[in-house]
Image 1 (spheres, rainbow, N blue to C red):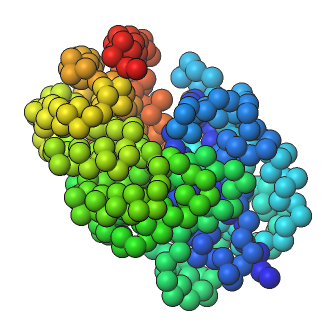
Image 2 (image 1 turned 180 degrees about the vertical axis):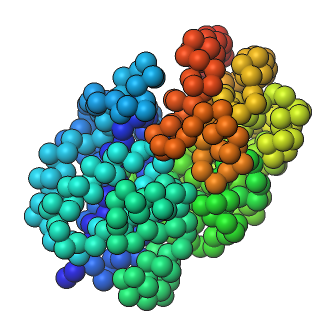
Length: 432
């Protein structure tokens, strides 16, 4: 049978954490190919691969630090006074494991634009090992900067956004007759899974590229969602993270059905929301549904306490709506330590006083603060503003560990991080 190899590359960065991070799109491609190809997966970021399993500790929900090694810092990043690392499974493990394969096609996932060094490592070695294999690159970086991907790596195909029909035409694969869950069984050990109720987002926040990656909001069929949950549960998964950018849009329609399905089958699953939820949609009924279905980690988006900037950055939430959402979650039975609010740091035009005020405001509500350091994302309005502040020609400079430092200075960034950490520590007394 013909062979195909799926690869999720290693990450080169100042920091990386397994925050329910899985190559969901790549795994869906794997299912599309299965049956016609013998599909192999090598995920460099698999923390439970035998070569790295146990090197770092996991939280009760499956998240945790990646194994890492010090890497040479590229010239554009040398002003940043932090260690630069390579995260993931060692290269020699990869070479040993895939050398015996004979893939006709190699599919490489691309994450953030500033992680391209991991792709470079993979492409160079694939071309040496399998010179006849056709290379396909898809994902976030490929969708946001397809010309840059083509120039750097010269792949046989760049898959942009969710245009899977391009891939089917390239490989001459007919559309599958029915939906099947992502190829999760390709992992030797699976600690958690991820899922989506819909692709895309109805909002057009100027710092976000969700609408670029998924131009049209597509609500997925409920039967597909239930099949994915069944598939993950049979594989032993008890923690599932939602990857939706606008999860609560379908909450009142889908959550009761999912809850009923789980109750009938006796499932006990903890759900998590690493992408920020829209507080505007989190009313009492929705909060109650979330508690009943098994949500555990709840992340809300505020971005800033400044009402004028809230309007300029999409108008998707107000301070009053955030307060109401937190109150509804607490009333539904969530603990304060289950709730975290994202605050942005480093948006073009945003000064440090505004960031500090936002941190202190969220702390006053009795919940945790998470600083979301601004990353300039190509094809967004904020990107055009950001490159007026600092040149962004090299995608390495899109890194959220870089732009706020270039904008505010290292001392101010560290002060704001220290403030956030200190205030979060004060909340430990309210957590069980």
